[in-house]
Length: 330
Length: 246
Image 1 (cartoon, rainbow over the protein chains, first blue to last red):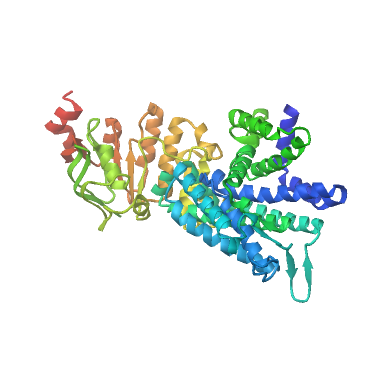
Image 2: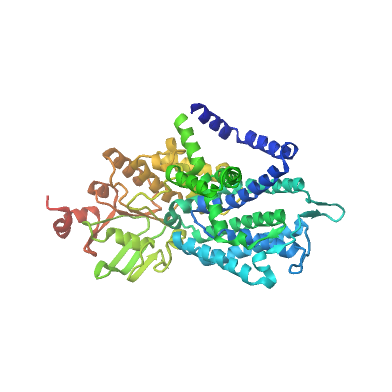
């Protein structure tokens, strides 16, 4: 046990080296793994981005959003609408230099609107408002078929392309798209790591820890919460965009409450307020069903059991178990 | 230099008048103690001044500015700092984070997204200096939950000092402290610059008479006496109601 703790302590004290090793492994992965594994890796990375965006709200700011799929799905529908190739969509461009800013602005504005409306409430009321909003978007996606394609969603979403006029490149193949997702994932992790360690990030932690004291220090806490909500919404939107580009499809399922629930479970399972925890949660939630479903039809029951055990025995998630072990060893 | 004034301030909880026509004038730089038996309205008065409680009637002024209807954060911006009856710090964060969170807001850099707050020397050096001054420099990286009760009380005061308030309201800063901790707290409060106006609610009369330059005595939500510590000691009404004849 002590050995495991030491390994963990080493990982923490050499996190730059660990990141470098992981990055090299990620770059080299397509050389030695199957295409199925590459697909799984892409999914894991996309859901990791989605989960760390929610961690900024749940783990750092103390805002239990149960409607985070709203932005995930919105990102998917926006990219499908502007770049998709079918009779419902505009099919303007698949140039990521244009589409990414549109997805960012679109999901950011929606997050700003919902943030202003919902963030005056706290706790379970906030949870219900975010859930209601996401379900409202889901209903719109299902009913307004002329625009959204109804229950079929929007198909024909192309893979992204970089077009600089003289030079262009399309991330068409699975491997090329995998690298594209790795770059976006690394960039978002880098940005979020900076944000949570910035004065703004410290203010978010303060709001989670003791909001009334923050007010007595003169903080306009609403302003900070809206800021966090918009950042989280935009990042969730980008992950939704990537999923649509990966499956060539924006589906209403991306907006459904089970998607919000799934990502919330990833964050809780991995450990809130750690950024790394939700990534581990995303890996488990995407990989475990794949492994278990090859052995049993009842894999969902087993997943449920695993979740119950975690909630009862490790309320701080996997990162909580690891850091407890480390503290004992030190 | 800022004074605090209340004019006919009332606060009712249902049928109970917790504060009844309180007219209080606390000059800038004064060390003003509010004393009285349990339930006399001391904490309610402090909370009505800092904005935690909405007053039923009357007004509150900070200097020449009326703050009666301002929310707590706007009062804080105008220079009103407060500590609370119960420890009210950021308990799952480190000691130095508790201080820097107040300093970064005062310096106007709390919205900074891209600098690591540990590398911002303007925040860190001031935080470390303040922790040294109040005697918490040895525990700056400890999580507040793991500090002793006395250290947490000191930290609570230090967080408010980090705001550099013009007026500081202290609600029973020595409650629950050991004799040694109380002595240190009295020393700390005694050393505060006299440009800061201090309003102190306190049960420990030794602390009150060591620190206060003026005292207001409350009883059942009403002011029954005000004056210098010497005058209060001699006031027969106060002796009857509160201090006792011995």
